[in-house]
Structure formats: C-alpha cells, structure tokens
Image (tube, rainbow, N blue to C red; front, side):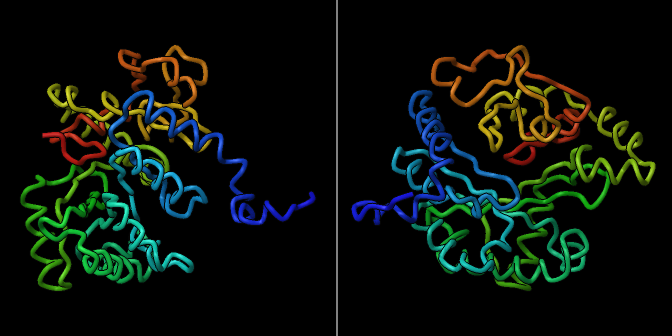
Length: 285
C-alpha cells in the first residue's frame, strides 16, 4: 500500500477501517429509531478499538451511554485516562462488585481483584462518580455466590453502602441485584456439581407473573460483535436469534421497526422472572 502525504493524519484510524461500517450502522440506528440509551457490555467493552469513538459519537447525538465496567480495566496498561474519558463524556458506569467482602470477590474473579476494584471505585469517586448531584452515575452489581436468589435489594444495598463507606471510603448511587442465569460457565458448574435441576426448580417455583411486564427483552435489543440481533444478552450467549427473522442484523433496523416483534423464550428466562425479578437494571420489583 502506498501512503500519500495527505493520508498521514488518518494513519491511526487504519486498523479501525474494517470496523467502521458496523460503527456507522449503530450510529444510524440510534438516529433513525430515536433510541435513547446505548448500553455497552461484554466483559471489558472499553478495550474495543472503537469504544471511545462510539461513545463520543453517541453522546454528540444526545444518547445516554452506559458502560458495564469490570473496574479492573481502569488499571490496565494504556487505560490510565479511561476514567477521565468516561467522566468527560458523562457516561454512566455500572460496575461489577459481587460482594463487599474481599475473599468472596477474589474467590470468584481471581486473587487481587477486590483491591483493584476498590482502587477503580476510588478513582471514579475522585472524578465525581457516585457523588450526589454530580451528574455522574455509578451503580454496583451484585450476584449471589451460588444457586440461590438474590436477597431483597434495599437491605443488601444498605449493607454494601455501610461496608464500602466505613472500610474503604467508597460511594455509589445504587446497587443492582441480579440473579445468576443457568447458562454458560455458571450453568456448566451447576451441571458438574449435580445442582442444575435443583436450581431450575428453584427458579420455576419462584416465577412471578407480574415480572413479565418489566423483563428487559421487552424494551431492548442485544447486538453481538458482528451486528446480529438477539432479544437479550442471555439469548445472545445461547446463540438464540430473533424469532421468525433469519439472522436479523443491525442494518435491518434502518428499515424495520422492532416494536411488536415476537420474543424468543427458553428455560433460562425463569432467571429474569423469579422472585423480585432480574434484568439489566437490577431487581424488577
């Protein structure tokens, strides 16, 4: 490839060129469908080459952006300015901290993860995240340690707030309590331990019909890394596409309104309807 002098300013963008069509489609869909919220997830979405470009463009459109952050990414090499970028763009941060006790977090996610997570939370707090009236939202996420339903959110949030404030000086806005879904690594663990059937029975026995009005698949679409559509993140992980539409893609939303599309359901959906319910915004009731 011959590089002309007037191409020099574009050199940093060359590795991103294969990703730009999907990025532009996402931005077009945000505009055409007047979508109010862009929720970015996927373990560490901040490490995607187009993350900052997409966030900046979405914010210019006036779209609310949520970053599902695992906190340890804030201390990864080359990400020292990440927290400042999120604050400057007024991105809402939803951070995984599955317990306020260090041993429980390190047992689930690896040695030293709790301390790195606390360091990340302090970094965000220093920028105004979690501070009342700052406009910078910082929510935390709790998952049970095993095959049980989350406890009632208000008491659990009070426990988190007390322990994190007293022991670590950390502040946050809300605690989101999510049920563990019987799929992927957690589902495989239950099968290995012979506890899968028991957990499914627990979910089915605690199904609450009223939660069906508020499950996340009724108000969002999940887009995978190739742009294909799914009814929720869990269907995406299971490889379940949109019902009645062969490999529905992000580009299809430029011409088709998804309102009223049927929603594909399976056994794991009980994870969203059991007890107080569960979704990307935490408990449903």
